[in-house]
Amino acid sequence: MYKVITPTTPEELDKYYDLRWRVLREPFQRPKGSEQDEYDQVGQHRMVINQAGDAVAVGRVHFNSAEEAQIRFMAVAPEYRGEGHGVAIIYALELAARNDGAKHVVINSRDNTIGFYKKCGYQVAEEADTVNNPMAEHQLRKSFSEQNRIIYRPEWCAELQQTWQNDIPISDAMGIRIHQYTGRMFETRATLSRNINVHGTMFAGSIYSLGTLTCWGLLHLQLLERELDGAVVLGDGNIHYHKPVTQEPRAIARLSDVTGDFSALKEGKNARLTMKSQILDDDRPVAEFTGRFVVLAKREH
Image 1: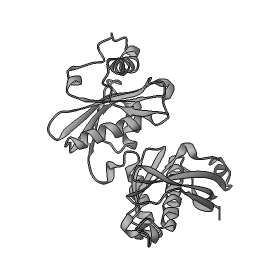
Image 2: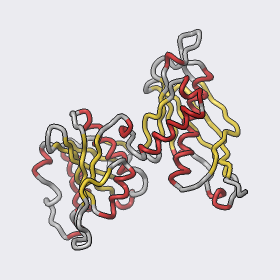
Image 3: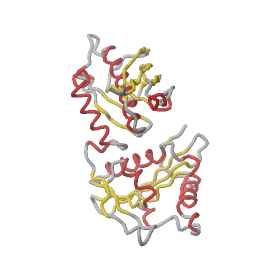
């Protein structure tokens, strides 16, 4: 179990700065203390910790001007890379910057990390001369907008939202919108007033539809991540209702809850996967949908 915190205690700050040094300074034979600078006193810091309280990932954001924020000192412990913790830090830092009035954010990146930031919606603003200086850093920039509040693959999510509106009319009627995607978690939300039953709570069929579409959306995005072709269809599904939905409906699907894999698609065969989505009444879990999905392989004509 991981969570994002703001390090404040001496023990937390020691772990925070130690990870910074180990990842960003020690490999270059830089001394302890070189991982800190004058902006640490005015910046905002975030850290992902595991269940034992150990630092997994860290990052900082500070302001260069009233409108420009800069993210620096991004670091993920080597043993935890590839698990989405860098995305979690970017999300937390961007949220802090937005809340403090930033209009855009910049990040300096070397060649080996530039692909990651592009997936998070950043664009190259200034290219570095990496031919003459392989360690030179490019500057990337993201101007905040409604679309790119989605932290990971915002352009894919915009296309998926448009597909829903065009091809799945019930999604528009229910007011279903993609709220967040991190590469491992996919969250949707719906408009309660469009889904009210005679009791003044969310219609059970709407809850089922929200849970189904959330799972479908995560599978669709994962096909894109894996560069695979296939059509996602629901083979069977069931839902357990625990409590009524009386506030803003939310649904969350996580990649960790998917069983099965996509490998059959590479052989031209259908893939079968089972996954879950959790439906929440604001922050309170109230229902759980389980779906058995088939990804139909693209057939050669």
